[in-house]
Structures are given as structure tokens and as C-alpha cells.
Amino acid sequence: MSKITFRADDDLVDAVDDLDESKSEVMRAALRAYLDGGASESDDGIDDVVADRVE
Image (tube, rainbow, N blue to C red; front, side, top):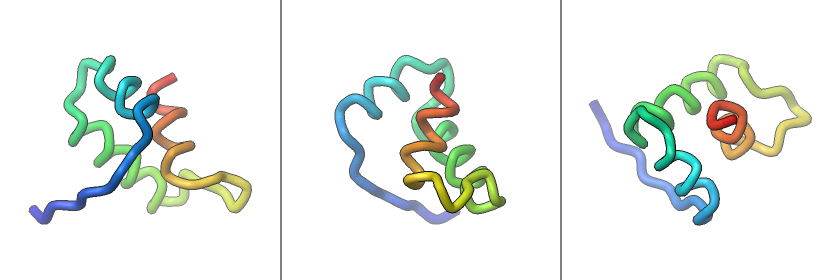
């Protein structure tokens, strides 16, 4: 498995830290949802996918 690294603001990192799953699991699921069409053209990007998952 390859590794992807990116930067996120502190609020997003804190929200992901509050979840029971690991950061890797959360981000993998969010990226997979985004790439599988879980985001529409009106979405701002992966941050929205992660925010939806965190909520």
C-alpha cells in the first residue's frame, strides 16, 4: 500500500482525532468516497467529505 501525505487545518485534525477510527482509516474512507463520486461539483473538496464523515 502506498502512502499519501497532505496538510490539514487544526480544526480538521482535531475532529478526526476525536473519532474512534485511526486517522488513516478516516482519510482512506473519505478519499475513497470522494473518488467514487461522493462529491458533487458544488463541493469544496476532500475537506467537505471528511467534515461530513466527522459529523
